[in-house]
Length: 314
Image (cartoon, rainbow, N blue to C red; front, side, top):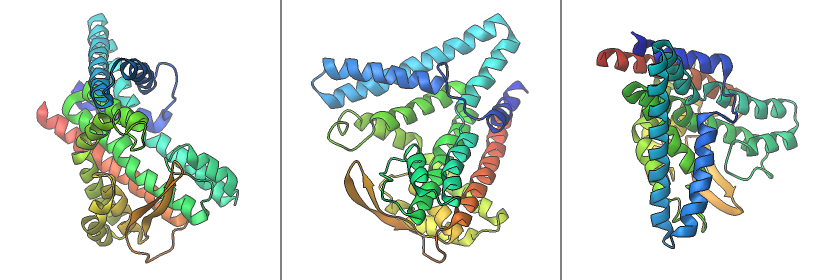
């Protein structure tokens, strides 16, 4: 019974408290470990791809050993302490409220026509350059990041919590953090970040596709176009440069009846991204709010699925 309640408790904590990043937040600590290991391995090994493989492997090993050790020690002190620590670790892998909060801050600036502040705020949550984005470009970027991170920040962690508990979910977050820190395709990280990027792709194969399907289901209950979501996801998801991000983004585009993707600038380099969806409607504030509804409802469906999987395993 304790295992069945762990995931709902963690989900509720995330909804109530959000993601108060601090010195002892596991993801912050994982990031610090990656920084130190990157410097050490890159200075020791001339072969940057080998250094990257060792970086990914070492980060996962340290994360897994520390997470398991903390859980074991807490349970040895007292079973209740073990349960509390397990819930806390599980909660730190989820980012539903944080994703809504950070994207909503951008949108509030757009609502107030303070586009300069909106661009600066957006730059904190997306990888593209935002300095020259107009209102539609800002909203499109918000919609894309909310859709993609519904998979990376909510449904992916729920999936791994359901099959492997807090330790496996933290290993998933470690892989995600590796990808966000070194998984770039520029000259600096193309070789060093190769293993981290491939690992993140592998771990998100199932969660991303599950997210897309849950968004189609959510569209049925959100007053959005579920048929369009399914059709566009099947048609456009594989156009995306990422093997995974296209599924939630295309599902969202189809549900909203908007076109996402298109030209963007990354690290000073123009990139002509494939388009996802059809321009049935313009991208507006209502499009963003529809994406948020998709995010919350698909996350609730994923929560129910995760609890069911844990119940089956008990």
